[in-house]
Image (cartoon, rainbow, N blue to C red; front, top):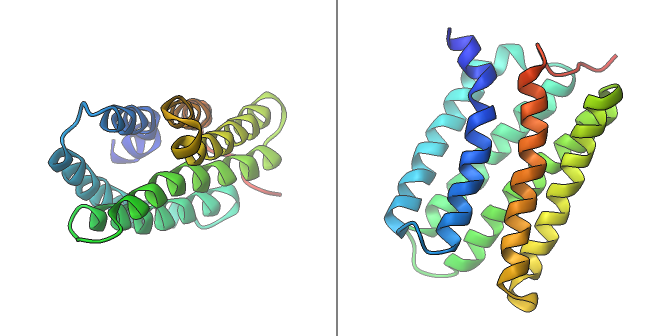
Length: 175
């Protein structure tokens, strides 16, 4: 049952996480709740990496293990941004951009390793998420529409990728 949960939960958690981030940017979520979410996500990422290490040491899954490990670090930086005085906005932006780009690169990589329609979905999802990162970064200059468009693009691109992975019995493994 735990293995099945590890295989399917990301299909729900990824879109929920991006929806939560978008709601937080819009002011619908208080700062303390965002801090708690970062702590919970850090614990979940660490637990997932430890529990999945044996299954994720080869091929494309190895790349995704690195996404989880590096993402843990990015999430810890986000957590710290709510606990310190100083350049908190820079750290929070780095956290969001990190989560827009790191999985995006892995999606493009996965798309190259996968065949047919699934490979295309992974690759396009990655590109859409990278475009989202650029739009998000342009937000301070281009305006809030760009920032929100970036978050929505990241959500759509990464959700397409994770739902494709969840519907497969496993991610493709390199030859």
